[in-house]
Amino acid sequence: MAKLANYNKKRDFKETGEPKGSIPKSGLKHKIDKTKKLRFVVQRHHASRLHYDFRLELDGVLKSWAVPKGPSLYPKDKRLAMLVEDHPVDYATFEGVIPKGNYGAGVVHIFDSGYYDFIEASDAKEFLRRFKSGTLKFKLRGHILKGEFALVRMKGQDDNAWLLIKHKDRYASDGPYNSEPLCLYFH
Ligand code: MN
Image (cartoon, rainbow, N blue to C red; front, side, top):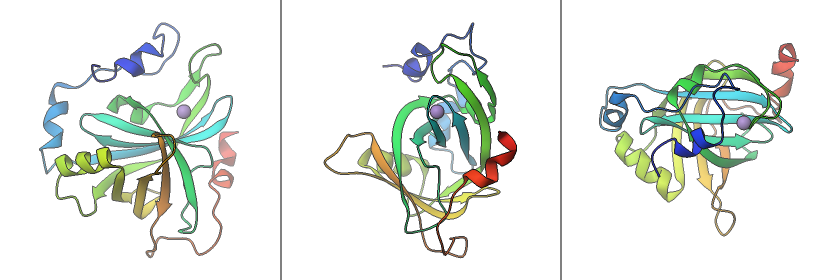
């Protein structure tokens, strides 16, 4: 299936203000361009069920996971992250209301954004291989989310079920963490 076809199929762009999925011409180059800074974004999505969408720019798209409890800075938390359809890179700046009756209807706010670096993988090509094999390690450079994280696909379950885990480092929290109080101004 063409890239982002799944994303486009789920949405009616006459109805929703979300960006239409297209791949920038330079998109495919990104995976071999070592100098390119890759973005991450976490969007709080108050849909029928509140969740956070965690997205990493890779291979010309945003690889995306829906995280019901949101990201945590506490290394003992293993937050379920369901892999969903690739989103266009333009989605990283999207905020707004997805109208009733549409896919994902509800309110989207950016919780955090910035850039990320690979850990262990030497370039995007290798990072993409690791994505396919189900283990990603990376360092976030956001305003709230900083330092090392991993996304690991769970074995023997739904292929789309991953875990988002904070590694122990100086940015880790030493007790339970909840992103919701940081979002009070969104309500
Ligand atoms: Mn969502």
